[in-house]
Amino acid sequence: MTNLFTIHPDLTIFIISAICGILAFIITIFTMPKLINKLKNANIVGTDIHKTSKPIVAEMGGIGILFGFIIGIFAGIYLYPSLTFQLIIVLVVILLVGIIGMVDDLLTLSSKEKFILLFLAGIPLIWIAPPNAGLIYLILIPIALSIVSNLTNMLAGLNGIESGLGVIAMTSLTISCLILGKYDIAIISMSMLGALIAFLIYNKHPSRVFPGDTGTLIIGAAIAAIAFIGRVKLIAFIILIPNIIDAAMKFYSAGVMERQQHKPTEVNDDGKLIIPDKGFKSLIRFVLKKPIGEKEAVRIIWAIGILFGIFGIVVAIIMPNIIGNETLAQFIKFKDLFYYLL
Image 1 (cartoon, helix red, strand yellow):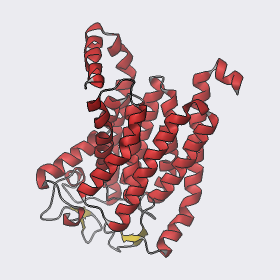
Image 2 (cartoon, rainbow, N blue to C red; image 1 turned 30 degrees about the horizontal axis):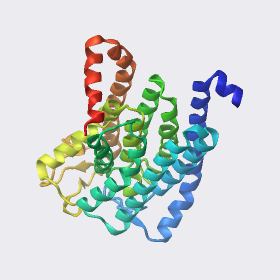
Image 3 (tube, rainbow, N blue to C red; image 1 turned 120 degrees about the vertical axis):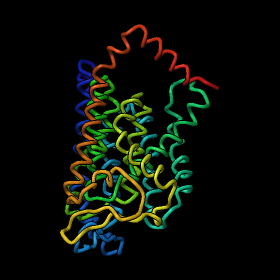
Image 4 (cartoon, rainbow, N blue to C red; image 1 turned 180 degrees about the vertical axis):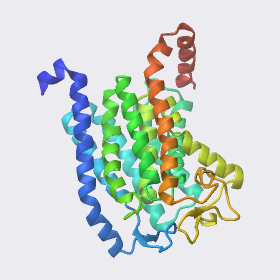
């Protein structure tokens, strides 16, 4: 292993990242069946309102994603000890966000309570900020984590939509980080990617389990952590554009609402999704201008996610040329001064 590190360090960490992703996938895919049964036995369930039969489905399945991710990160710590501090910080943050998600699933937190708790959960990321970073930048890190976690929590509700978009985001971030030579960040993204792919097998239509806030919040937290640690904030922003559009439409049409105030999408007699007479606007409801099946609606949202995921990868490909441009390089240098404000 030592010789491999010396001769091919990038190849080695890529292999380690792949191992972490595979382990996360294996752990999650074998954990989910038993977890689903345990959740049902504990009556931690919800009604799938987008089916005419209204089946009862296990909730809070994001625990399986969390478990697979934890094992993947521990494997990364064992196989690449020099990244121990960085990976432990990410692990602590994701665990804290996961716990907040569990509390929200069981007790229902208000939007304000959730935002504050997620802000606090993001504070450990400050310890892996750029050297000599200013106060404004440091404060923005947990704020961004709270916002991004909420964004991935809002574009939700259909079978496989959250985990599928998570798979798309993590795939795009992984490829982008590899293109930019940020191989160490791939350990984080591939660990989450492996767990999400396994979870999607159980979460896709017809869903056997819902992720709950436990799952949706940690997807956003992982994206935020990768964005700041890997210095790929622009790419993460591009990937999150579908979520941003969805949140903007909801806020513009209804302001800040608690989930209990939301009037859910309805199902007609043909089993197709329809928009209720009154209610907020959203990306999903924009897709539902005419009645369509749930699977079709999810595929359209996934296609939108893939489009922006590819755009993010394209930005990663052209970024070295942008940095090489003298004018743009001066702009980037000016932008970097923001890190050291206050």
